[in-house]
Image (cartoon, rainbow, N blue to C red; front, side, top):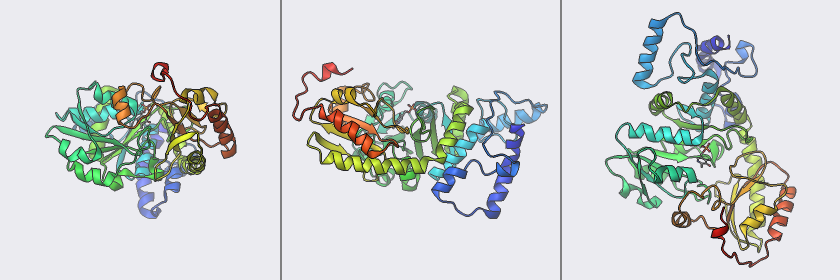
Length: 408
Ligand SMILES: *Cc1c(COP(=O)(O)O)cnc(C)c1O
């Protein structure tokens, strides 16, 4: 029943939109996008459709729709066919995220890494296996490219070297801004220009569309580890690519063929997470900015990294032993990942970027004394009390003997 309800909704939505919906602000889209058809159907919470398959007495019709999907990967019109081809609950999240990023479409996957893999496979299927990338990237993204697990070949460059590194078989330019874990920012507009006709993929996990919409600066593809801020509560793993409908079609075909789909319950949780995304990001960013002010003035801290566009991520290098800080936090959670309601801290050289070879890690500015913190929604004074205590047990000027052997 919910499926039929969802099927009828597309036309109603289009009609309503044409008739009465003015352009909407981001905060409004966050709450309403992907849900515009619900009220007219007497529904408030979006239905969760757990079907893996969908009965149909019209196999000629299904054959035609499967043929159409094989041609351009457009979402099949009419009722769904099979769970790996598309799911109405997941489609609501995709619609909402596309609205927030200002793209035609979005395609959701089981994780951020599944989403990046699908992008690489789309390009490799066209014979475009060469990737140009700027470090630092998230550790596993770096590893996926460095190891060439999907048959790709990577050239690492400085931002200014992108244009010169392009080859006839270059299929993708991959960047993060602000980057994980140093929060280094790139000029996306200049990079998009340097890419020419090669698609620029900007990993927007750290900024979210609340702080930055890379497509407006010329990126063709926007990647999210939706596990982080989009979900926002540390209880759902997902990835998504926001892009034009042509590329989205290719991504859906790869998703169908390789199976990295998002579970409908995860789609529901992500749609719910999006509705509070703007207020979560704004509140956590305010706290982060104040923590940055205090850390910058603190003699125990050697250097603080915080992007110009703001955000809830902080990175800082300390004079003392970063392992001691991790061991001594009590309120702050010592854990990898980010973007949850609670504050997390981790040591990139030990965890998130452990897999990146040490010379490359150091070359990208990921020092052994760097700590990365994802600021949550706790009270600023409680956070500072905890951080101050944890830093306090790290005497100023302490040497870090044999840090690298203590790594893991
Ligand atoms: C976590 C992360 C990823 C990978 O996402 P998963 O959901 O863990 O697969 C990719 N990019 C960035 C910037 C990340 O922080």
